[in-house]
Length: 346
Image (cartoon, rainbow, N blue to C red; front, side, top):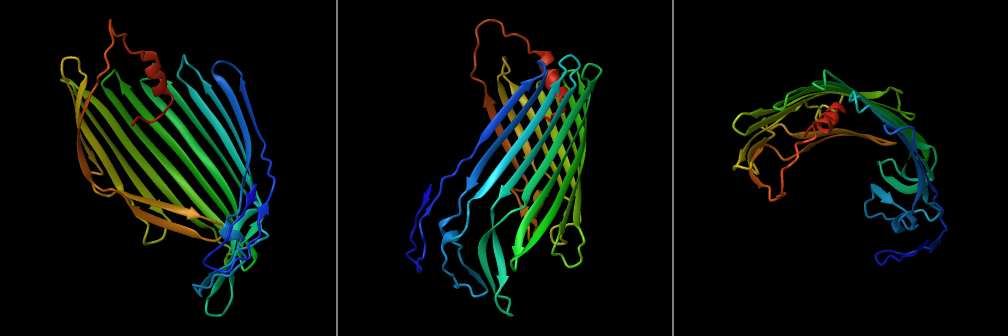
């Protein structure tokens, strides 16, 4: 690998960079049986510093936030490991997924923000740091009852992020935990009714080593959802889904509890039922916003972004597929098996 460049807008003191990088990878897949499988993957990759990060010339065009490159930067080396286990019981419809992921970064490139005067001016310079890693795990379990008429599923995940940043050349470590637990109930009655209720609770907690009081900064959220599909005699299909998000602990200007509702009414057309006319309404209550929290080694950002608000759409679809002979009936066993896995229908 060779990096070479020249700046035409400022003095250039850049020296060509030449490196040899080796990134290994490995994969293991083991089938205990037809329904139980274990997969493990490992891979590594390098992230090279950019030309501007290596350029050792100060840019003082903004006196309050000056920047300068670092010619001694090393490439960041990422290690990624994943393990996944799944178990299906085709007779009962019971399913289980378990997985974990680990990521470690050596020589990660971060910006060292240093104060240069009493007026608040800063100099930002990229440097290599070690100690960055991320660990996460998840599970999902679904159990059907009465020939998959009722399906109860549980799922959850936990994520820990050890993020190292630099402030005045001192390490500031952000310890961030995010945990979520979900429960879902599904009711399927014959071929004309699908009803689903679900709830989830999420916790986000962060603590910085350079924090003045050493307190944890936390937020939490509840997500409640209900969706339904009803096949009405005469070729009508009605759908709706409602999501209610309850946020706590975010910044006052961001904290919001939107209630989102979508609905549609569909009519099958023609003798062969290969035509569809659908009227859909999106964000009917006009409350669609995206609310989130971003955590890094030096700061926390709570954000609220406006999305496309309420609108309606009329669509027409026609199936052109044609098969000779009698069409086989749908495989009800496979359809019910997928329902029994606890996945949500869109």
